[in-house]
Length: 262
Image (cartoon, rainbow, N blue to C red; front, side, top):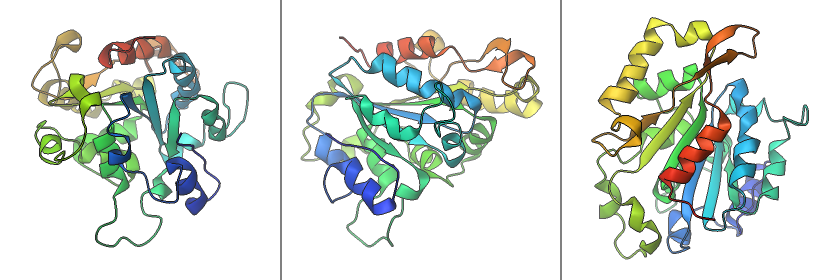
């Protein structure tokens, strides 16, 4: 089993892959499991990631890789019971690895070596970003790729044709239900004023209408599914919309999209 951990660059790479070589999608193409790429960006709602992992931990046919942006890691440093250190994620048997920005280019790249954000894109059946911060949403809709997470999103196969052309010789039997466009599910989380800002409205329009799927999670022309925020008391003390959708509802969406069965 792959293991995560975050103490040193080379050490992390070895523990993530279970061997001395880097993570590659081909190594897991025939594992017969659903592949969830679960990501968090810089919002306090990152503290719900452990809840999501725990709720999904009983699925033996599910493999999870986690991406945390640099800002997201600040919320999971063992500050409290609800904010365990990211090094504890390995307690869940189906968590295969945790990837940070510095894992992307550990050594100078040379021809023939794998590229992490491409391998993670190939590996994933679904990418779920929960929470999606205002900053990361702006980067995604603007086409930026300045960290591991945004590089995965920028390199996503938005046509459903690239993956097919690169799978020659690979056993893709575990991907029968995931042919065509693979989905990116996002759960925005931010302050009420940020959520109601005009620029946020324009960015949500891109994700929901220009790049979006059909209503109620139906299959459509797009590849983005937006789980809109809820209204509640926010971490800053304000009461209003902008809080990330309840983590239990996010788990339900993951279960449905990956067709998980206990």
